[in-house]
Image (tube, rainbow, N blue to C red):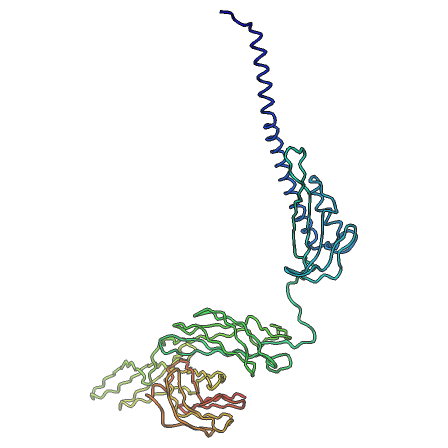
Length: 473
């Protein structure tokens, strides 16, 4: 067997490697340049997109350029902002187009040429539209790819001006509103709960109700037994009524937060009242009044031989009169009684002069009803003996239909002749017409239709002879 020389095999292997490399090289170059071109394509796309965004951001921002004028008019500044990012992608100023519009689906309102300025008369809310285009062309024509453009469009709203202030000044020549009065009363809902009813009166600086062509909006808040925010519009008299959420006790505070009306200002410094409160409670008396003195006697007897004695008694008694409603002190009256042998006691008492201890609120008119709170400040039960009501006789068919006290009916009828005097024909038990000691109740007087403007007077007389009255124009 004849063997070939080793050098011949080495030459054959080198030749085979060259052939294999020649076959693989095109594929390898295709892969390498493909990766490079894909990277270039992605880089150009990112550069074009970021350039358009930067130019639009520059043009929409607030501020002025060194040469004067707002940023949206600085055409060269917007293009320079785009070129800072897109220069490596081969961007030129002519590749950046800047226009303006007023919103989606609107026509172009202006252009921003190279070396020029944008329009001066743009409205607030106009937009700057930046279009950037760059052509992509492969470095090596390994694949027959045509040149194609890469486009990006960015749109931003132009902020021409943003007024900033902590408070809006009140114009000089417009009327100014203020809170003229706040009335708050408690209403018994009849189920063991109570609600607060508030009537707010609004006027302007001329003293007239702030209503005129349209109503004023009153914004307020309740706190205390229940909390809530309320909003309402005034009526023709400049008044608005609010009702709180129910609660199991009477303790509320109502405050006006704001007044709103077109062509009117609001100055809280002019308010006669901004907040009002109501709280009703029945304290428990700590003493018991009595008109009969308690006498403690310590007799001293001196007998004589004739079996006749003359006793001398010096009793000392104390009487506790009714306490005053303020419950701050309990006066003590010292009663000295001198007894004679015939057992006749002559007490000397310092009398307490009685007075009318009643307190009333203002008359509140709401559509067809009058509300009036009455407080008994004494320690005795007060019973109503008569009521007199006078109201505007407009229309002539206006009728007084019923009267209630704290939700309980005390009179019902059909009177159309003011003034009406009522001292009989009461409804329900006599307890319905009574005010307990240190108690407050709300009287409601209702009519057949809404009350007209005019003077209203209510007078209530009690069985102790005291009278209370209130008048509302």
